[in-house]
Image (cartoon, rainbow, N blue to C red; front, side, top):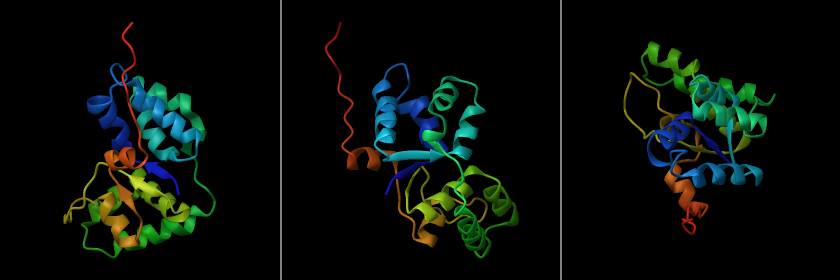
Length: 164
């Protein structure tokens, strides 16, 4: 089982915890974990990131389809499963429409079909106005974790080297 990363993992890392300028080890770890087939994201997340036209967008473009997976043919029934589950809940129609047009929808479906674990900063919430990834994961029996839980579980280490 591999991890599938949500857009917010990349954006929060770049903007807050693991900026490219002071923690390149995080980004190197993602590449290494991807090379070991442990960490991926999906093409739709990559598209959201690339729209930013910044250092993160450049990083994402350099990763390509090895990191940002395209839609496998067997994902289409899973998209229906996710859509049906969301529609059967008490979300407002606007929340459902937004979710079904967002990368989150595809992320959850690909996690479902590939038996992957979703990595997101989102937390479950009882809101009718926004469909949250963890709520859908819980409803469909998909595992999810925060980025910090993933890093701890995988024993990632970002250790300073000798100063030059």
